[in-house]
Amino acid sequence: MKTINLTLVLFLSFLITSCAEKPELLANNNPDKYTVVKDVQWASPDGFPLTMDIYTPKTGKETYPVIVIFHGGGWLINDKSIMDQMSKYLVTNSEYVVCNVNYRLLVDNGNTVKLNQIVEDVFGSILWVKDNISRYGGDKDNIAVTGDSAGGHLSAMVVNMGHRLSSELYSEKELGFTPSYLPSGKTAEDIANQNGLEVQAAILSYGAFNIYEGSLNGFEEMTNPFWVMGGSMARGIFGDDFNVVDNSAHYKGVSPIYNIPQASERKLPPQLLTVGSADELVTPASVKEYREKLTVAGHYTEYWEYEGRSHAFLDSGSNLLLGTSFEDDAPEALNVMIRFLNGVFYR
Picture 1 (tube, rainbow, N blue to C red):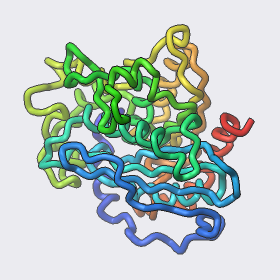
Picture 2 (picture 1 turned 135 degrees about the vertical axis):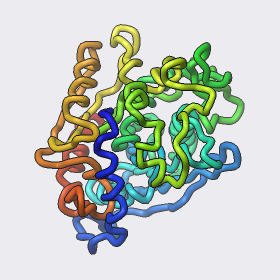
Picture 3 (picture 1 turned 60 degrees about the vertical axis):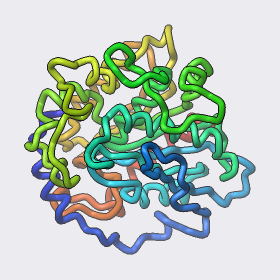
Picture 4 (picture 1 turned 90 degrees about the vertical axis):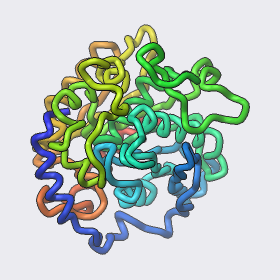
């Protein structure tokens, strides 16, 4: 994650992002091709309800592989609605059950949520999907995770750290996560021993893979305008008692780039990494660096760079300052993603 030198631009662009989407083309969203169940509540950590939308194709198959989507927004803004058009496109143009997931933001519950708790929400959503997705036509044994920006980071955490589960609180002594949802009668340790968070593919779109570096460069300060956009004052992402200098292990524990296993120890699933060639927030160089570390560790990856595009090209609606719109920009990227997933699940 680069220094927060582009966030002012993104802040201004957020303010003038069109809330009204263009009329959707049938090729991008054909409601006759799928069913959708909105706002399915899957957990309620600390009394905060978490929901997902579940889309199922109507092509007549008994079961379908599953795509689980985590939205972006710097862990501070947005919700699953920013991925609505992406979800509709995927289910219109491919044969996957699509789960579009809400997780807590740092500013929720009175600006008290910690980044490790967001990771725990994401882990919990995967466990809920595995427990329940058969009711929606999904195959619990064939799951892909994806997300953009912060959602790319969270998807990478599922892949890299889904085995690091613990019933203890996240600490430098115990850098493990307690999922916000656990199957009945199971502990976090049970899930870890059973490799219960294993997924079969991942697509990481302009993901933020180095939380430690981003925090050193000002993420937790008011110079990061996403705090203002989220309606809260800046603070430490693990609470006021921790900081990136004195508690570096906390920050590295949620940074995928520091947690890549050797393939000889634990093989990660196939991964596609995407980024816009003009992205100045999550640069192509940073994504290539992460891919290189995966490759050196022995993992299979593919890389796709979207020529001329900046950040957030998968978001619903349009953004005047960034010059992006879903209708104009997202389909090409989503077709690349579908081809990758088909290569994994429909070979």
